[in-house]
Image 1 (cartoon, rainbow, N blue to C red):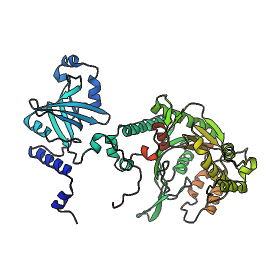
Image 2: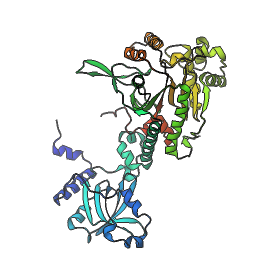
Image 3: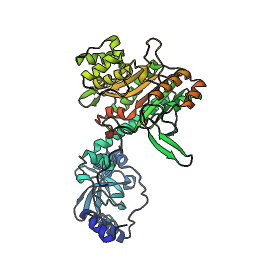
Image 4: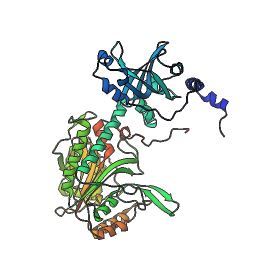
Length: 509
């Protein structure tokens, strides 16, 4: 049942009622309340930049017609003096002052100017000049009303401080907090740099399915949906890996994709159920090649954002410079255990009983499957991961936790795989791709035998068939775009670098 007008009016706050009254006044002057367009000659930033170096005399020396601009923006400040007013307009990074005068505007335009509020959108045209205080200003010869803000700007334009509101109403966060706008400009520059790098290396950008018939590509819980026309269940992808490798089989030797992955798992400062990955594959390459390529990629991305300056993340200074450190999983986990008074050496780091005992002595939860590889990885994540502040490649991951990686020919039970860490965050994962179809089928079979009740993952026989048609030696890597953005913008939580992160609903809504 819809509200009647009197109920709706009572629900409005006083400020909104006043703004609606002003909108009605503007309409009564014969002005469209919600016009469709405005023909701007410059952005505010362009207008300011064009005349920034000219003083008042320099501007006056230019004929008015040649220094006349048409600009539009949101009103972020008003200083009214009866027959004149100064407006400050904002449009993204640019701001510009506008001088409104009764003896210059038409009677209707000036009447409209008296009904303006902070947050309204207007367009103006007129010549540029400098005020007596030297401020670059547009003299409004014409004023066009573009949109009324029926609700006020956040906290009188001083920005939002409540973190939850900033995430839920990101548009207000962007309006009120210049730092937030800068974070997302830097993120965009970073992604553009990644794309330029991959293109420059001869990779082809592709798109693979978001909706997939099987939950494959990573050990993560998927989101499930139903396709009515086909009558089948589909899954939002947890990773594009198996489709990208199909493309290598099909004759594209260098492919990459920058797109969303979805994992129906927990929320934290490092995890959002929807996140962005750059994933790439190169034929005739191995794990070592991928480390070298990933190192150059991350340095290029950092250069686009930091311009040679070190990244500051929390209280740490991170230098994305060659060469990144390298350490084995066994070595760094053993070192961390010794520091915690649990000295495990050599074979003990590959044996289930001592690894279980280490968990119990350190009061750490055991992983669901108590294999040596998963126990070792659990200890690494709990004790060592956050210590990796400077960019560091960790190598030597066990087969049990690397089902798509090629086994090392030199170390039994170990794969040709790396993960890249910086700022205590895992930011990339790569390996020599397993291209033996029989071994891959056996690995999948082991996964299926060990899966937990309710696990939606299934054997991907179509991918096995693709491998049977021949996947050349191939290296691959996935880079967490959001986490790299966290590091390069000093953002402590992944929600700070995602425009519209997922949140629990507010009570009563």
